[in-house]
Image 1 (spheres, rainbow, N blue to C red):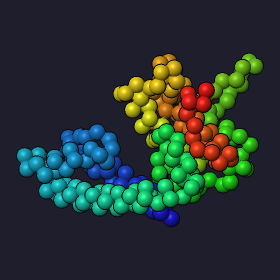
Image 2: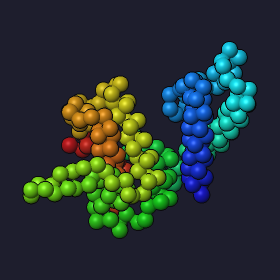
Image 3: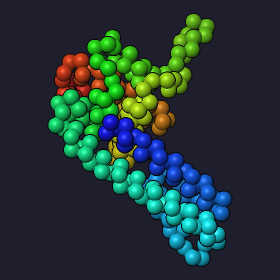
Image 4: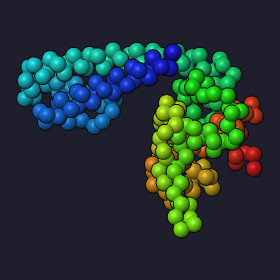
Amino acid sequence: MLFRTRDLWVRQRTQMVNALRGHLAEFGIVAPAGHARTDRLAQAVEDDTCALPETARALARMLLEQISVLTERISTLDKEIRRAAPKDPETARLMTIPGVGAICATAVKAFCPSMTLFRNGRDFAAWVGLTPKQNSTGGKARLGRISKMGQRDIRRLLIIDASAVVCWAARKGAPKRSWLERMMARKPHMLVVVALANKMARTIWAMSVRQQDYRDPAMAA
C-alpha cells in the first residue's frame, strides 16, 4: 500500500505538471519537462511584467499549490521507504546492487512472485518487460525494442536507476575495462540504459534465488 500510494501521487503530480506546462505554453511561457523545473514556471506566474491573464495566473497558482502539496507528501513517503527498507533482509540484499535504491528494492519485494517460479534471470527480465523482441528472417534472429508488456512499476524503476548509473558514469567515468565502459563506448545512451536495467533484473533474480549479496564481478574474477 505504501508504494502504491506513492506511485499514485507521483502520477498525479506528473499530470498536474504537464497540464501546467501545456496551459502556460499557450501564453508563450515554456520550461523544460519534469517537476524539478516547475520553479521556472512559478517565477513566470509571479512575474507582474508577464503578459498572463489574471484568470490564468490564478489557476496556475492553484496547480502550483497542488504540485507543492504532492511533492511534500511524496517526500514523506520516500523517507519512510528509505527508513524501512534496510530493516528487511530481502530489500537490504537487493540494495547492495549498484544503482538499486530502497524504492526499487521495495517494489521488487511488493510486486514479484517467488523468484523460483522463473527458470533463469532472462525469464525474470522478460516478465519485467526488459527483454527485446526477436524477429527472425532469413534464418537470422534480430533483436528489436523491448516489449513493455511486463511489470511496469519495476521496469520503470529499474530504468530510472540504470539511467542514474549511466549518467554518473558519463560524468565520472565508468570502471576501466568494465562491461559498462565497453557498452558506453559503442552504443547509444538509451540502449545502454535499457541493457543495464536488463542486467540489474537478472542480477536481482540470481541474488534472490541464491540468497547472496551482490559481488563485484571485477573483485570475483
